[in-house]
Image 1: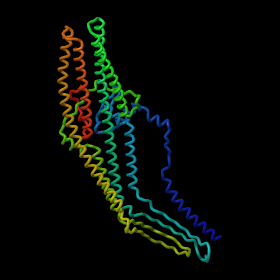
Image 2: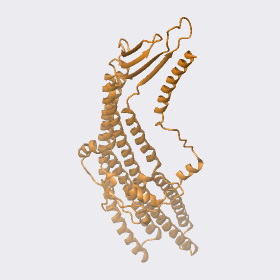
Image 3: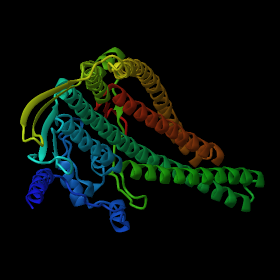
Image 4: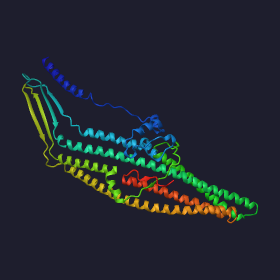
Length: 467
């Protein structure tokens, strides 16, 4: 009976240890399911409530969109489209989720490993058990070597977290720029469609007048057939531009993060900007401090430096400290201290050190390559902007001459000095010249926004006599 009591006493102590371990789990997180319910997914795919969008835009902390007003009720300007895209675009929501992941990794990097608690019991169960007692052992240990790499892990996690913040900001810049670009594309597509409609209308007028002239015997069937072919070409061009306009509208919605069926009105009389011409060397110097992706690469390199430092520190032997207490079956109580050290005869963490050093070299080479590409892009874009500006200037001078010629032919038509074909040919050349200029203006906007992205300088596009 006495032996049975001792046995249950030991079991009770073991239960106490297990209870203490279970108590430590009380503060642990619990699993909460988040199923992919069709109803919630459909709600996320719907167009957002614009009143909520206006509130979220006011809370934006984006230096490149600072002090920009937002009110979509009178139509969106390209800048307002950029702000709306930063709030609504689902791709940015995915990017921002990385911030939460980086914060969790930073938290994990600062958490030390748990100490290890051990308990064992021995109960004499046979042989000469007279005078023996139940024995037990108690141990507490902790991996001291984790302190060697703690600061390196924290430095790496902090730098990585800051790098991800900059990467997300860079993605916000790109999404805002894409929405702004597609807004300008949609404005130009609308202007181009209006010009093509004017061309089609003039060809329709010419065809009707020639048909009347053919019926009265003034014009020939050959004249009418020529006008019919021209009218068919203009109608085909109109259909093509209507299709292009719809594609631009869909691309604009996608950049904003809106369903394709939503029609987003743009502000009336949106002017077209012209990129400023600046020295390429100055833009490249500014890009190294302004481009968020380059800053993120710098922080990524800093994080990798900490990883290398941590890997080198981790080559030192692993040390475990422990305290123990116990009683053997002869009722002899003991208390002691223990230490264990790995002997680095074979594994000196050389593989991890080599991998981290290779990653550091890769990041360095990637940063240099990104600088080289940036400089080349800026050189190419500034040269292309200068050349396109000259083309626009030449075409605008030619357009003035075409306008004057058109007025002269209109006057000559009324007094019978020129025929219908000559007059409408002049009108067509005038509209075609306008189309060429409009296409070059779109090219200029594309080049200007590309230069903003390459240089990290938001605001290179300015209103400069492009209407």
